Image 1: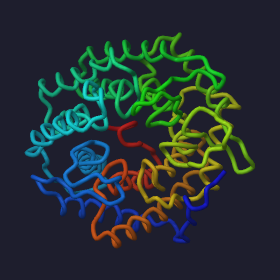
Image 2: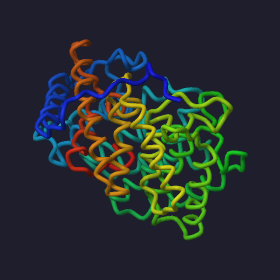
Image 3: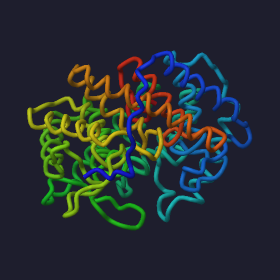
Length: 397
């Protein structure tokens, strides 16, 4: 089921690498020009009432600073802004905001996208110190004895942090933490009529979510990223669970296959975006180091549905916008080597550029956020040039 009001037509602009590079340069220049070392960036009316100066990795300054640095590191941008002087303030503000504004019981968690664990990872990237590494470890280790929740708030996010910290520090403690948390994560799976799933204790309610931010896919992400750290038995368990649970929760149609936000219910899903629906499921599981004809057929059907749905009207962003949906095509291109998927990703990119420019003109400024704003789109646009999908936070940090 495709909800027409949530989607829009593709623009008819042909793929232009020059236009894409120009859009990336415009996004970077705008973000740097609007940066204030005291107030960071202004909020955006599309970001659910998030005010000015948000420091988080998801909505705010930590994510934008990371993205600007990443775009420079990979050669997508020539702008080399030095953000190191603001890192102490960013960490302090992130900690204070998280402790005061997090939902009840969440302040104990190491949160990758809202807590100071993500900000400390950014600081480790830009200006590493042993004290920062210890802070990341303290926050990540806290999740071992707390409700698992999901990638945004809990243990799956800290497992990704352990992988990133290993790459940055080569310290053995990170692998030990990952292995401990991976064992607990797999032990907490529950047998249901829709396959093996986790029950998320999220925002005061318990439910079985499916997507890559709040649910099943998000919990599997660190297991795929840390595949070589799993035991052979754990690898076999994941390779068995994923295709079965995906199939049990799939909603096939003549347009392709979609998945709901939660485990399969009586009503077909209405969302088709990265955080809930086919695009996020494809983006997550197209990286799986295992394959069967049925499993790969499901992924291709998810890509077909995402293409049939067309770009999202909500914007050009990653979490619930055109750029995020386009990553499903890039991942299928890498998995299959079929150029049709790269072409589709690039058609979404040209539409996303038009959306970005239109929203910026209407609001009078950019949208300064990694997951919901313009810098996340810039990374997607770069990946459309290179044909190498690296979804921010998940594949690269």
